[in-house]
Image (cartoon, rainbow, N blue to C red; front, side):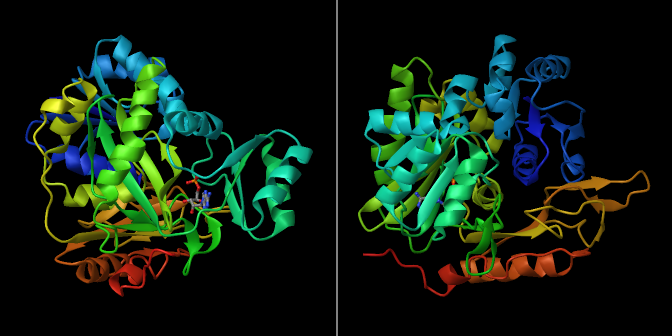
Length: 415
Ligand code: AMP
């Protein structure tokens, strides 16, 4: 199987490692890729959000499967353009990707499908914003309606800040605050059959103790020792299958990766958001534990044969990833700084580039992550932090508490 992977962040580096490790994958191309991916794939230049360009590249490299990592190409219709060439693609159509591309669309689908989620209003003017904030009270949850790379959401007790964010965004979704630990559940689907991966937890806030602004994600771990035993079965029954059925009913089946972001509240799991692709950085830990060959799994989802795929196999133990972010991230990350100590197994590149002389430099807000497995969560956590300790990058910062509460048994479900 010849595979073209679209994207160039940490998620795509993790996907590339998984695909390269699948004996059925005889050639792996990545576009645009990054210096970490370059070690396991041939890199090609492409604008990932240009449907015609990606489709042409897929034809040029004679791809049997195209795997689309980030959301922006999906929302732009890249999967549709590749499929139109008769090439199998892992990633939903632009129509189905609206599940991520529009919070209003996602709420509409959830309501129609009876999926448990926060009550919400879409607000287009200041008066509607005031009404919604009054109804729900603090903490206030205000979300930009469009794609914002995980950074368009403000959760705050500060009423003025909530109103300011709403005014800046224009069209927003304001919703009820959900309390309880968060879970990211990835589901591989061909539109009908659906296979859950291991639940993971990520860390959205920039600072230790969940302080500071939201980011794209500062670390993750899997599995979740504190998760209720029926969690995955319940979410498949109450969330995933009804959502897939509703999208089939609308004539826009969702095939690819359905990311279900949940809060485990006192009344059970509630959907915080859907994404239409693998989450970053949870992918790094989930795929580190997946023993089943990745290429075959994604190909089955892309070709409508997932129902016949054998059950997934997982490695024992746990995985932890810790993101190293650039000075100034998330507000205004500084790029171009020299990185040393990063050319090692377990370092996943996210925002890096390499000079002609081989020097590695920062090229994004989230620069890289240290990803490690271990016989248990504590061991995986120690190993991930050991990787990060050896990386040198001026001004870089990382959270020091990734997976700490889970290791210490401090995560509880309220109620
Ligand atoms: P989203 O982009 O919708 O995932 O939101 C980013 C983060 O904001 C989530 O991971 C949560 O930590 C937080 N968040 C979003 N919606 C809610 C909600 N209704 N209640 C509590 N926290 C939320």
